[in-house]
Length: 371
Image (cartoon, rainbow, N blue to C red; front, side, top):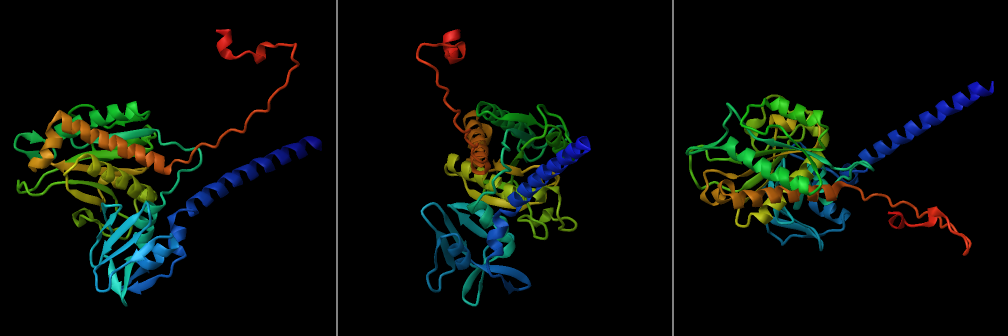
C-alpha cells in the first residue's frame, strides 16, 4: 500500500530529525568544561578529589609558574592570568577575585585545586559554555531586593529597599537601550515573596535573573565595604557564607546552570570593579539564597556596596554614582551575552541571475527605486 508506506517513511524521517536534535543537545551539554577536567588525573587528598594546577594549565596551553618555597602559583598566557595561594579559597582570575568551594592545597610538593572547583570555576571562566545554537540572551528579569514590609538593610533613616528599586530602574533603562527586554519583579514599594520573584521570571521566560541588593555592617561599623556578586553554590559544597547552608546540600533547580551562573557573576563583578574605581573587590561568591536556589535560568545576586561605608555611599546615594553602577551592571550583562552566544551562521550567497542586456524586469529594480 503506497499510502501507508509513505506515511511510515514520513514518521521515520520525523523520528530521525527528533533524534538528531537530541544528539545535538547531548553533544552541546557534554562539550562543556567537564570534558576538560575529565581528561586530567585526579588525586585523593583529605577525602576529596584534586587536580594539579600545573596539569590543568598545560592542558589549556597556559604557562605555569611557582617560585620554590612560594605560597603563590600562577597560570597565564597573553589573555588569561590565574593566581592562587596555598591554603586560601580566594583566587584571582584576570585580577578579579573569585572564591572557590575548597582551599587550594599543597600535596607532595604540588599545588592542587579541588576537582569540583576546576569543573565549576576554572573551566567555565576560561571557556564559557556556549548557548544552544540559535538561542539568544534577550530577556532579563531584574529583582530589586526587599520592598513593602521587608525594608532590608538600614543605615540611619535610609532603607535598602528604596535604593535597590532606584538602581533597578536605572539598570532597566540602560538594558532597554542596549536592546534587551526587561521584566521587573516590582516597580514600587511593595512586598513580593521570594518564590514569587522566581515565578515572575519564569512566567516571562526570562533568560537571566539578576537580584539587586546592598550590604551594611550588622554593628553599624563603617570599615566593611566593596562589591560582591553571588552565584548558586554547587551541590555538595559549602557556601562562601555558610550561614545560608540550611538543610541538605543537595542540588536545586538553580544548579542546572552552575557553569552559566559563575560566568554571569564573574562578568558582573569584573564590570563593577572596573567602573567603580576605588571600590573593594570582595569577589564572586557562593550562596544558597532562595532566589538563586529556585531560579530556572542563569541567576546572580549582586551586593553593590555597603550602605554603612562612606566610600560606597558615594555610589549608593548619589544620582551620578547610581547611574555609574547601573551602567556597570548593564555592561556586565552585555559582556556575558557576548561570551556565551554563538555568532549567527551566515546565509550562503544567493545565486546571481543573469538577464540579457536589452531586457528589464521589475524584479531587477532595487527596492529604493520603487519608492
